[in-house]
Amino acid sequence: MNETPDLKGVSAREASQAELVALRKKIGSEIDKYDTSKVYTVDASTAGGTIGAIRIPKTGLHSILVLVSPTDVTATLSETLFIVQENRNKEIVGGSTFVLNTKIG
Image (cartoon, rainbow, N blue to C red; front, top):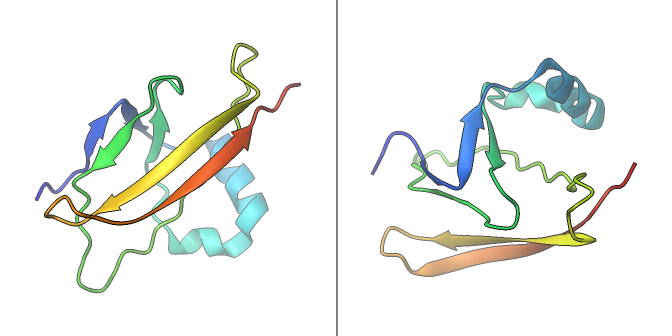
């Protein structure tokens, strides 16, 4: 398995100060429990993206998923996000569905 995730339609970048400030405002000191050095964003919401080959340590994975509503005026009124969890044999072992309403203004 890869040391770095396999990204398709997703880009990794450094978190901006504004993003870190907003996250700290939302979750407070809990933010200190997470590695915030990278932010993964979907390149085009209409095409979607995947983050695969995530190595999960034996002690478990302590991660945070922050969903942000699209603000693009060309976006539809809502976007749907699916999370599908697979094991190393590509068997589906879980998942979730989220609907994000577009924030205008």
